[in-house]
Length: 495
Image (cartoon, rainbow, N blue to C red; front, top):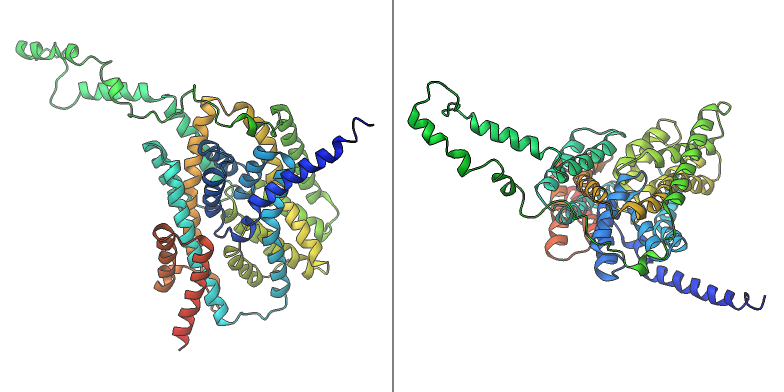
């Protein structure tokens, strides 16, 4: 006992120091990180790569790809992983609470207020919300451009960003975004490992030999002087000579000898093995099967709060792409069920766009209203929805980190992540397009209209983008300025 008890105060002090470090570095993110996941990633890059140097650029890009590739809230998973790598599971859990709780508490308070308002809001409120949405679009567009600068390393990654953005704008479905990211990873690995380079080069060489105006050497009509001209050509340009010149000056794929970039001091807290990580993932899949099975087999109808939890748990499991993708699914799970009115849903949607922290806190707003409308405690509904929608992504990424730490040094893994990273950046442009299309709110169209219907909202979007890119205006200030400009428009039009 004498040898154990003295160590307890020391452990407590060490734990307290680690907790204080997490609080000191993360405390402001949950109240200042406006703009949704695309902007959050840029904030994390400046905070943890450039300022605190907790991770370097390569680890950041890898975590970005992993966070986008797994279901659940993308920016929340990335912050969780950064703190997990740095100081272990307690730090990761604490950072999540610091990150999510401020916005969750705010959305809960707003749900109480929205439940008691009239069918329509005052006109100035619609103008304020439209201005906030307009500025948010500009902030997200800026984040997309800045992330593109890091994700684009060659022509292939540039093409992946473009095609992913274009494909995401043309079609929208739950299964679609993960398929686009898988295709991006496959394209990257096929290109990096030169799986089609040889056949393509042979086809080009054959096309050159058979190009119009150049008869084949075996033709009987070829004149003797032409044969003399054609015969030395293979000697002057042998087939193997052009091959090195076709490769890009900088190889797009990472070298197999590239060193692991996480210092030993950073990897010590991450004690997960690939076996433990795999076990966590399998355990989660088991809980997911049980939850969805009970959802369909319990006596009809199951308790409201359980159905709420099951719907949020299912949404947190099957949503890829983060906040912009969760909105239509949550509408299906709460509005179609009759738990929340369409008007209240759209009010909450406008508010969450201008709220700090993760967009998945929208579930707190919906859970509270669901419980209130069903005769239950609003706090119980908010907590159940919050736990249900966040837990799948965090559990999955925690288990994945154990597997990732064992395979991340492999060349094919780096190649796949390079393509997934570019595809995920392309989908950020899709988020800009989606929000731009529903950002204009008024009492006559509470479901939202395109910001392009009124040039003033486009001006606010451009002001937000230009202010952030060229004048150093941060995201919170840009969004507040957008709200003020929205009120200015209302004052001018009403006058």
